[in-house]
Amino acid sequence: MHIIISPSILAADLSNLRSELKRVPNADRIHIDVMDGRYVPNISFGLPVVQAAQRSTHLPLDIHLMIEEPQRYLGDFAAARPEVLTVHYEAVPHLQGTLRQIRDLGVKAGVSLNPHTPLDGLQYVLDDLDLILVMTVNPGFGGQSFIPAMLQKVRDCRSMIGPRQIELQVDGGVSLETLPDLAQAGATNFVAGSAVFGAENPKEYIEQMRSLAEQG
Image 1: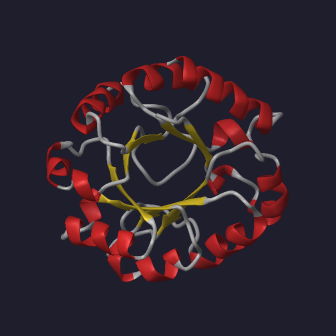
Image 2: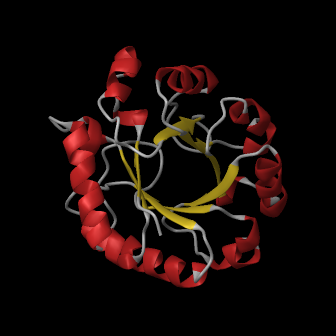
Image 3: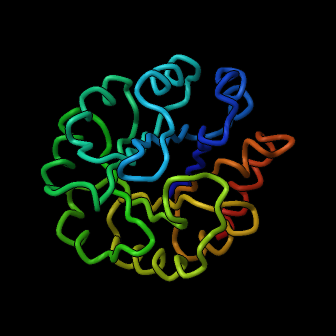
């Protein structure tokens, strides 16, 4: 499956967002973590920053809703014309309906799982999914260290996906050091914030990431 590199603007300099996004012209998507301070213990940014990002880059957006009751806001975020909208498994009481709602808005539907959340429930919604995001840190803050136990979870998720055309995304502590093992475990979509925007040359760093992922 095609490798996708998605830099996260959580680690970007938001006071110079347009300039920051110009540093990653070879990315596949721009990952945006929306946090509400309730579902996760941090507040990041909301719709205005998403809209600013949409105006500041030609790259498609990948919006990760780390919020409670995400189904209430899907139409607002879909209006920014993202390629993907991802909700958290733990935050949605009627997951199949929410995924169908996302697709009905003309957007790819994703679901994210926290490190402690088992994969079991996803087997019933696989036909409604375009992307599964395995969190490899506890969500809420950037710059965290990768949780090694998540490698097995990525392997198990790849096995569950089987031949389906579902992207397997990983987010949290993804870097040149952790990426090879993640790619070998079956990940195809890599979110990286601090590693990319903290690099001296983000464009070159992305190329290194892509090369390692393709080898995996």
